[in-house]
Length: 184
Image 1 (tube, rainbow, N blue to C red):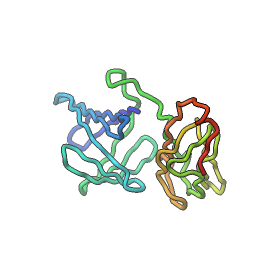
Image 2: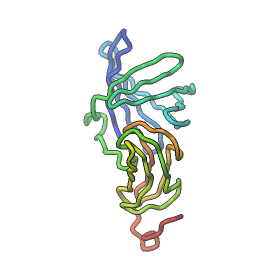
Image 3: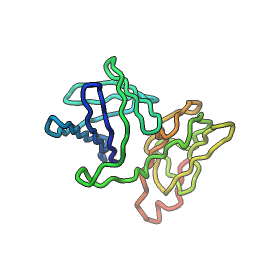
């Protein structure tokens, strides 16, 4: 998935393009008017709700990220930053892909029940998680057959709208032995 953000640190404004690779690393391209475009390789991992650790040029950083619609609030090294998502990356950065493997929360709420765990095989339409929002329970179902790769939040956690909840690797194997299996 590729995204484009505008960043303004009060001194200058520039564009940041972000693309996630298959190996959970990221390519970040920074485009400033006064400098040549800069491309960085970053590896990152999730530490907890909104908490990330990333490695850039052999230096490990920890940051907090909060999301409100298209705005991202980032706290890094004692400084606060705000970036705005402005759209999908254009063709020169690679075709933008819909992130079908990551299921996001439709609204803020609380995770009432996790129905799967990493490693579970799931079928299209199978309920994965139950979220309570506005005094109603909402079930999030799998969009395709696959295997649960990551569950980002435990039961009881409060979540924001549009945050990834579960990541599923699509099961593209059509062998008869894979069909119909669902692990408990």
